[in-house]
Image (cartoon, rainbow, N blue to C red; front, side):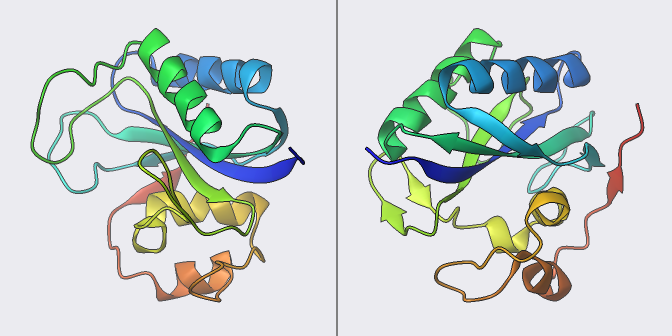
Length: 166
């Protein structure tokens, strides 16, 4: 399979958030593909639910030869190894040590049991768009036909998202 550029969102609001995001990046680089760009870190209030701790978020761009489903399985394996437990049923969103989402798989539109790309809520979330704009401000959403910057400019999300300083 040919290589594809993929954008992945990392998020953490439980445990040592900086360490977990860093470890996830290392594991993604080892198992999923070469990381060719990384956004800054952003701290954001939880989206869609109340939680005690805010999230650290980052977007990475990787070049991968994995299929969308293979990539998603690798990301789920990394989440599990870093302490995410998806076995408990819950309604809506919950706090988690690590969350890895495929935002874009190249410019492809994908809808399988495992992967929906572009991510269906990407354009509604400042915590996704701000780091994405760090590394791909001009990337064109394949169905909305707008750049990351245009999506950020039009985003209705009023949640607080700040650049995170180490």
